[in-house]
Length: 68
Image (tube, rainbow, N blue to C red; front, top):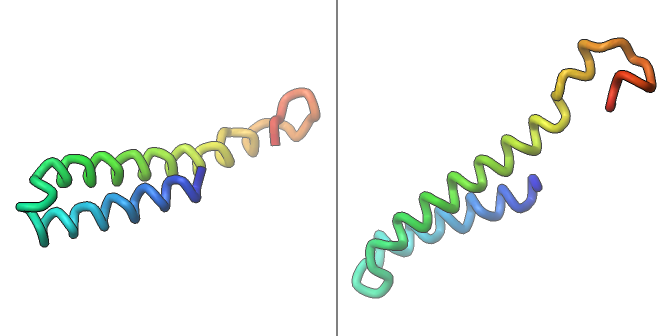
């Protein structure tokens, strides 16, 4: 998921740059698509980070109670 998030952010930035440089070719819908790709990439990165910190370290380290 981390790789997908990073790829979406990169594609979003490239899409915004291309839209700003050539608006007649791509139209301004590329800005919306670029922002959407960046926000989706951020969500993917945030989901990847929250999987590791889901509160297991606060529980007792039993096999029944902890998912770590």
